[in-house]
Amino acid sequence: MDATERRDMLKNVQQADFVVVELTLYTNTHPDDQEALTQWRLAIKEAASLRKMYEKRFGPLSLHSIPSEQAIDTGWRWNQAPWPWQM
Amino acid sequence: MWVYEKKLLYPVEVKECNPKLARYIAEQYGGADGELAAALRYMNQRYTVPDKVIGVLNDIATEEFSHLEMLATMIYKLTKDATPEQLEEAGLGAHYVNHGHALFYENAGGVPFTTTYIQAKGDPIADLYEDIAAEEKARATYQWIINVSDDAWINDSLKFLRERENVHSLRFREAVEVLKDERDRKKIF
Image (cartoon, rainbow over all chains, first blue to last red; front, side):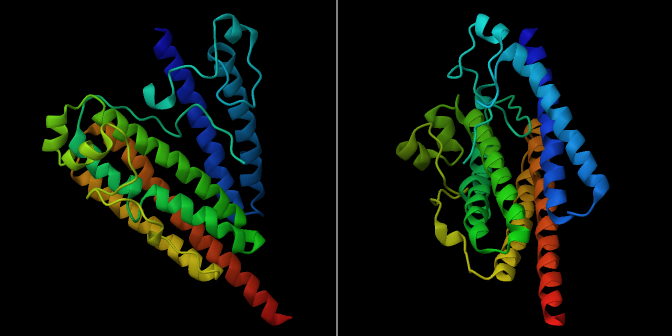
């Protein structure tokens, strides 16, 4: 059950991060599109919030995030499976 | 610099061993129009293009590396449980005797990756036209792989990647227009 929950929460992060990727590419060639720039800022905010929720339980996805007490208590280490190609 | 993210850009689900499909996917891994070629090409071209289009090359190059990781995940998972006999049947006998179960940057025919696949001309318009062509060729390759694959899960990920090629092609076309506008503005003054 934990694995399914983890996968679902990670999918939310993947979705939100992808919106940022897509809007970044778009705004690169449409620098004056104010609506897109607003969407881009909101997307970054949304992605950060979903990432925080995931990382709090399952540990950092990158070393830009501070490991939560909860993650450290449950034995989280950076060098720990599963890596993305093992999930 | 780059920071590693412990996740894939888009999920890759592999339900069964299929070394033959892995071999076909290698075309996009280490082939002429593949993700490695794309990533290295754009990453290298970004130094000698006007500031207005550096972001396009930088960010698409970065995304290509995440595509490369998705393909590696597919190839790894599709082959990890294959016996030497199964690999041989799939046309990966020569791969196996050289690399075992390891991944290698090669195309579907087993030809190793070479930087002669890519160019950096030092002429932004020439480079961007090459990049548009690269995206269109990659899109076509994904379609040909999907056409010979009956794995619905893998096809879902391949379709995502195919669509990304479309978006990248569009962004490169827009980058060409950005440069043309700039050039025309200079002529007026």
